[in-house]
Image (tube, rainbow, N blue to C red; front, side, top):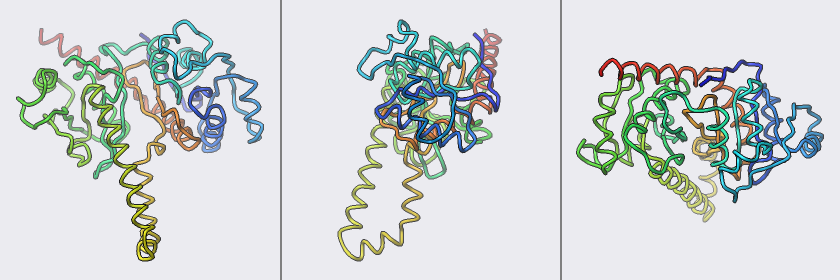
Length: 342
């Protein structure tokens, strides 16, 4: 399958009709990104998009797509409804007119559009969704966090290879260690999937396998890459997001409860703001879908303009770093080594 190339000049294709706050939040976020130097292409109902753009007195390229896949509709609808905004946006990337795909809409439809229009990289059975989990030492790359509820050991092996490349390209880790999520550090611990995957990762060329890790290692930064099945990863991610919200809400209530607390909160505001920004998903805007032929990003349906802006900047940066091409080369090298062992 082709690997779609990107240049600094190619725009990021934004599904401007996807998400709970579309198209207004999508357009505002796109304008912010454009003003920050990110080329953007809006895909959706051209009349509504041009009307929204008038507010900012900015001209952005608009590609007309008269249809939208609703959040309550089936993801496979994207195969039949070729004029839906997410399908058209993916086609713009596949045709070489855009460098990356971003959508805050139907996550299943976004994944389906990326698969059908952009295809899978050779050696990838199923793409994986990545989450950036804030840890003491930076960010941990966690995958899969929802694309594949049921996995086979070979799929987790592919996630490990892709996650390792991702951590090197995006976070600058020279030789990232990869951990396998389990319920104990010993190789004998875990369910059937984990126990079968452990020796496979230990013998996988191109990655540095740390061994099993546990849930508390997610935030310690013990390893920069953690692989798991999509069901477990999604539960972990939602639990982490919910816990962060609860802690900040409790802290806010306590600081407001007394004069001393309010004074302390005022003094600690810069530090608290820095921590809040680090754990806020809007700081990066969207989660990458690894394993398809071009950069593709899936955001929260409730995303506002800040998250859209961040997602577009992140997508453009990822595309210009040739992440997909480097990932394809790593997967090809793994297959060559496997063939040589036969």
